[in-house]
Length: 496
Ligand code: BG6
Image 1 (spheres, protein in one colour):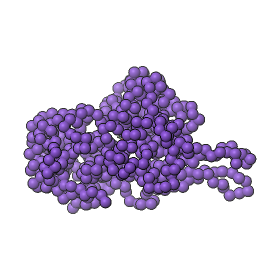
Image 2 (cartoon, helix red, strand yellow):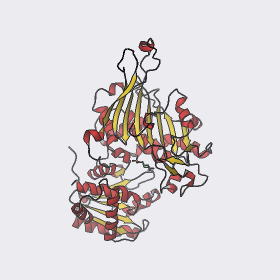
Image 3 (cartoon, helix red, strand yellow):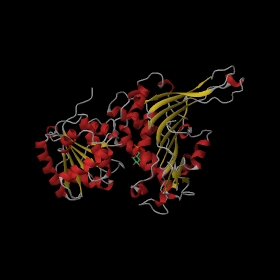
Image 4 (cartoon, helix red, strand yellow):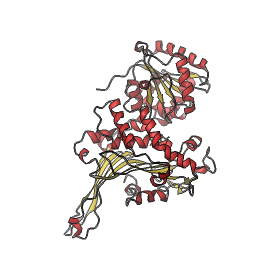
């Protein structure tokens, strides 16, 4: 049974930013609609902009209306929720602001008794993480060993790194919103609650694995951030590596935070490090030029606001990774992700080995398509397995069909947003779906050679793919060198 949710106050630093409007407050509102928030609950938004509580509530109402998965559906719930929203303006560097925050928290604890449990959500630019954390501690808000005074947790968004000083690892919740997605959590259930797949989930039966996270969107209003990040930091170091780990990990000894995270760390430890001089053999980078996406003319990356006109930042990457352990030795994992691709799609495709052909050779059948198991993370969330059948008729011939499971068709309704799941887990103190520090360090160390090589040499022919295409030709060559190709089925039409 799920642990109950303790009362708490959530303090959001960066409350006037996009994440608060688009994700955090809509997610909290939805939890209120579903009566999943504890009775003693309130939110304090902190940011530099001057605003009073009412103005903040007004802004958040508009945000919920625009971004919540079902709009502002319940006025009575909103009214009650809005009464729990507060705002405090101040400079992140000013110790005085934190003293005022401490006073507000003490006062709020009387109005919405939270037992001194505070969650500090850092939704600020990452260079403010260290100063904010230090000042929280200096204001006596970091909590300590004395649990009777309430628990303190801190939530951070990527990029992770740096020193969170006074906070113990058990208090730190690093968000990777992919881990909150229903379909991502289902990877584990699919693998470990079914007996039929696990025996073939290894080098004896699997030829290779393709993990794709394709986006239609460009860098939107985040050009300045993206310029420094690029797709490796933005998508691989977190989301794609998490998908890789969930696909490749061994069964954990228990379904709890440490056991799960131990297994994920073991996967990254087994990934063969790529040396600087081998980067070209294992990776391809790309950047989009102008093109047409979804029938709309779009700018080149270099024309986006906040981006240098001669930028070498990669908006696409494809990597081949090898996992040197008993289960996966010799099975390549191909990972790719990019902005301004023709379709929004995230999936994991397990390509099984071809069966021996001898039997059907006599029937002039040269090629048998291998079975492919696809875990579709988004959209059209579901699972499909392709297999060969004999169409009716006198001749023996083969045709590929698929068995499909679709979440929407099976369960209907709208799936909870990843942030709802993750916020509840943080309030419960369950860190299973959050990222541990050793995992982050390993992920960085695996990506460092790619980052260094790409920083040190100018890319050839950038921009090298048109917006609205599936990336640079070199990405096709990367996988074709080994006689394979990227999955194309899903490129044919919506929902395919
Ligand atoms: C974020 C990245 O972490 O994930 C964005 O910073 C990206 O650049 C987003 O667009 C993708 O998330 P989703 O849930 O739309 O697949």
